[in-house]
Image (tube, one colour):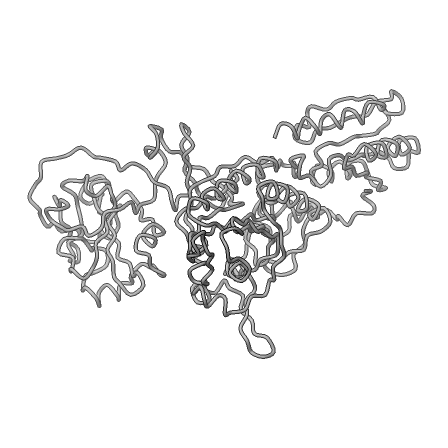
Length: 573
């Protein structure tokens, strides 16, 4: 390929719409083009990277026993109504009507469509297990599309669905996919962690997210440097901290005017926030619930929602609190909380003594309050956000925090969809059983963007060799010097013949423009043909990820040197 024939216009200025590094560089390097908010075209350079990622995914899916198929993007509402997700999925679901006024949606995911196929095609245990996958466009009407390919309204995803006879079989399929994902992201040259995660709207109890570690990561994770434990903050657990016990004191009511926040309360009473309780009131569907965490902690609303198995969870408004229990906001506490309000206490609460809580009266708090003696606890559970430095739940290590970009997620679904859609198989005795499912997704565009977030410098992208648009670029310093062009052409043809994915910058541009574009686009290897090539018979070989390590290579040795560098780089992954 020659640059003069490539649709790849680079930009010197950062587009105003771009917010994060990957978005800026993908636009500047000519990899993508915005069509509408959250909708992008992939230009040839970008599509080459996408295809390489998809090739790696296909290879690992096929090795794991996956069967690729093609599924429609337009789904009839009837299938989504059967599973109950037509209403639950919310405004992110693109909905449309055909000319006959029948309801459809654009597929954000394909559990319904594929389970419908399996329930019609699979009848016997002899046909299981099945691993079926596709790589296809998905659609989600994001409230605020942003960060380029990180959060768009149309995106490309690989989704595989496993169908097994029983839970044990599902776990085997899950492990196959987990291992395949490890191989995929390793082969893409990414530093990542598999973290325990919440299943969200997809469903199921067990899930892992594959997070590429990056400073601009949208999600926060915690991990233990002493063991393999890692989790999204929505899911992360830690050992409850046990504070030193005290002799129980008599409860007292104290005047605390204006102390509506934990900081103001701790300052007013001169106590650490760890000696206070944060009392939060939520509407869980139609039920008012009270959640207690230590004053220096935060409520993990995902954990609360999962614990209560509710559809909607939101902080109760002041008007709702006043109407239902007549307590002023800012001074709510668990003592004498009405029986109709369920009290959920974090696991740390029972380890506290002589603590401060709201008195359920404006400008007053209670001190020397003790759980069990002074207030009831209906449910005790881990409902807080884990903080850095807390003890790991699996070892003696201290948890650390990092930011990550989710590029894939795997779920153990169980029978959620097979029960809803009546997908059954006949076992050896002729009895019908629900098929046990798992689902496994990878965001292809997100993987490309995440690779950039993790691999860039001030000059542009530094692609891992396996997913770079081209392995090497041949750059004659002067396209008007016939000798340089002749040598460049010979090296270019020899590299092509040896199987190297190579591009030649044959443009009649200044050398500085070519070098800047090569760095911006991120070719892993650059072969510079200049005056020294003609006088000394050598070229400058630049390795993009370490530009200082420039090598001088004789023209006759270039092909061997390039092939060795490519092979060594790929073997290191």
